[in-house]
Amino acid sequence: DAPHARAARAVTPSALAPNYHPLPVVLATGEGSWVTDVHGRRYLDCLAGYSALNFGHRHPALVAAAKAQLGKITLTSRAFEHELLEPFARAVTELTGTEMLLPMNTGAEAVETAVKAARKWGYDVKGVPDEAATIVVTEGAFHGRTTTVVSMSEDPQMRDGFGPYTPGFRIVPYGDADAVAAAIDETTVAVLVEPVQGESGVIVPPADYLPRLRELCSATDVLLVLDEVQSGLGRTGTTLAQDLAGVRADLTTLGKALGGGILPVSAVVGRRDVLEVFSAGTHGSTFGGNSLACAVGLAVVDLLAPGDLQARAGALGVVLRERVEVLVARGLLAGARTVGLWAGLDVEPALGLSGYQTCQRLAARGILVKETHGTTIRLSPPLNIAEADLHLALDTLTDVLHEEAV
Ligand code: PMP
Image (cartoon, rainbow, N blue to C red):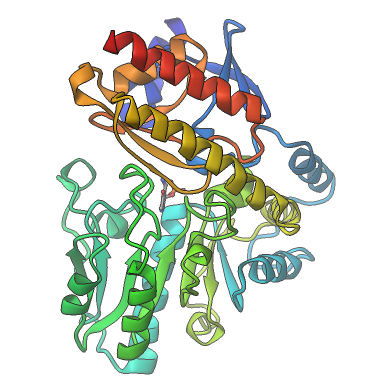
């Protein structure tokens, strides 16, 4: 395909979708849950930008907010204040039941910022010496690609060759609160986990995991940091994934859907006394909290504030769960994990179909999803997907798997 070949000369392989298990699609337009490629073929987007497109492509309210702001001012930099940062911060903290917000741009930046916050808090408040602080993180986690963030990973593909790594991370198995307890000592300033591991294949921890981490952290004066860059903002049928466990983190990272799939907007929200360690001049970003980002972010909060979209994701999530359970019962899936409108599906290995091949066959029939690794595929459609479209995706998946089985 000519566009692929041209792009491969100008863009690093890491930045091109086609190098990593190519699907033969070059997208040109999108509206709601549907996208169209450069040849005019239509596809149902059941990946939704790994949850960045929770409201679908070009949601009219988000496009309108962006357009209106484009006619006013887009960026002041941190040198000058603008009128939208405070309303944006207030809206997001109200939506998430938190006290304060620090604006950033990407998910990885928000996670790095949370790491800095925890270390500075440990230093200022707990008296943990600079250089000594440790943070407990988990195997199989995905928190982004910057140098400090890949230092939190044990995945060779993300890590190898990019050292020296940032020290101070203790990696323990995911979902195992006892392992976290054993890893905490007087140097520990934070436990940083995803409430549901997204990139790993929608790994849902035991129901008592987050409550136990909350208890442990409170008892040992350690910060609980939850990375909700992918799980947050409606995906789980609740505003935050942590709401399902009835837990409030000390710091929460948000990203992806916070920019409505229109532009990168991320944030760290949480306890005022912790985030206030960032005194003037200690942290910042030229684009973090810019006027355009705040305008879109405010419109995102407007979409979520009534709670209907979360409820809808929860209700459609029941449909999703019931349908994939049928596929498990029919022996077409070896396993399925769902939470809200989010599923990690393990294609039955006996079918001899990899996750990638499953995605190829789905794409050929107009459904876009992505494998995560091996035989696992992930579904994270827009939260406002039409119920008939969700059924279309699951009917097509059923056909693709069934044809392989017979
Ligand atoms: N945290 C989590 C949980 C994520 O899923 C991701 C992205 N997949 C990130 C952080 C990194 O976000 P970004 O790609 O915007 O840096």
